Amino acid sequence: MLFADSSVETQYTDSSGVDLENFIKMTLNKNRNDRVMLLKLESDMICYIKESKNPYLKFPQMTSYHRMLVHRVAAFFGLDHNIDQSGKSVIVNKTANTRV
Image 1 (cartoon, rainbow, N blue to C red):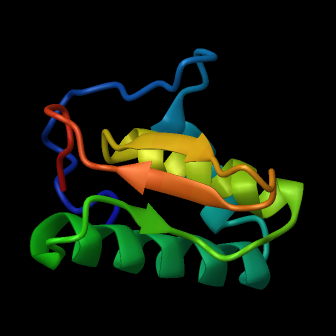
Image 2 (cartoon, rainbow, N blue to C red; image 1 turned 30 degrees about the horizontal axis):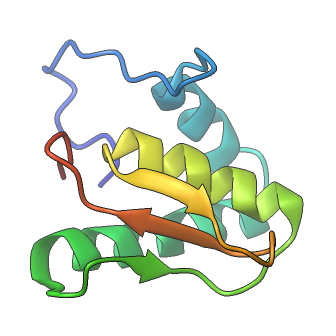
Image 3 (cartoon, one colour; image 1 turned 180 degrees about the horizontal axis):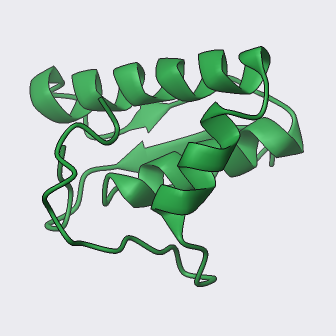
C-alpha cells in the first residue's frame, strides 16, 4: 500500500533530508522483521488518520531503531512526530499536511 500509485511524482523527505520513499523501499526488502514492523506502522497510522477521533496516537516503548522507523513512516504520512517524556515512546499527531 505504501507505494500503490507510482504515477505520482512526489518526493517525500523528512526534516533531515532522508528520501523517505527510498528508505522505506530499502527497509521493506531488508529483512522480514523490518517488513512486518513497517507494515504494522502503516496500518496503525492509516487507521489513526482515517478513523480516529483521538488527538494523537502513542506507540508503546520500543528500541531506538524502531522509534526511528516510526518517525520516518510518520513523516511519510505528513504526521507530526515527537518523543514522549520517557524518551522511549513516539507520539504522532495529525497536521494540515497529513495524507494517506
